[in-house]
Image (tube, rainbow, N blue to C red; front, side, top):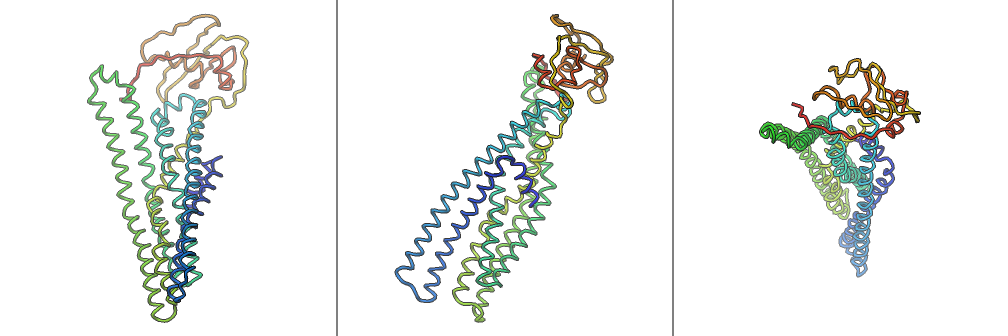
Length: 421
């Protein structure tokens, strides 16, 4: 669990400080809300000790006013900071993905598929944007507030305080089982979402071809199959989550009931005052309130972790200009020297040599699939050759930094969309 938190804040980059500020406001909000408990204790003490005066309700009212106003202000500041950090973090990552993709060889896109990369920039980032705001803040604050509340009760009565802390430890044990199950299922859900994005893109891009060849039925079946798979993965997550969440709630509720019964028994045995007993009864309804509401959010931590994995995978992709430098060619002749190229195991170009002199017009003609687009793409180093060399101005395109190479090209491709099947 704590590794997931550390990784998230490391992933947040420049927005980490804003996230920390939002979390601090969340903690202050919890403290202000806890002041309502202090106001209640003042009234309870006055009633138990039969020392109620005109100042007592005013004091309780003043504390309640400070509590409500402080909690409202901190809620606004926390959500403002967290929302800003969340949005900017994802915006920066999307821009980073776009910049990084500019330097990837086209072979990477061929291997990874357009749908996979689109899913990272859309649905995966959307998961991070929608989940992290609630999950990170509520789970961290829930644990911190419960710990502080339990320690405060410990000061009144160490026995009840230990009961509350024990309940929290049992909750975290059940939660560890929940997180383990979530880690097993989260990659499958993410893979299903990726396949869905891939299928939708393929369907939309090939709509005209599908209709022209009356392939609507087959295309619809493929799309529907990926939708059903995504639904099944999400339902599976929900079904596996519910028993653990129920067990978490049972642990917290039973612990609260045990604390109440023990405090009553201690009072009847004479080892606890009436005021302390009433204080424990009231606190039992409050100590786990934040943790209970955050219980369902813990299940999403591994989903955030899996999403971060997918985003960071892009940084592991090769760069086209590794080892390249800024080059200024003396002329713009393009030459192929004994070039071989393959898509995986499939050989497309074998021992091709030709020269396109500067200032001339060249037509590359051939049937569909013969390698015309591939030849052109090799010039701009969208792919790298298997053997041989492609040169611009007598300089191997691999010796150019990508930006200096692309300054010498202006390319427009006309494509006919093809289906995977």
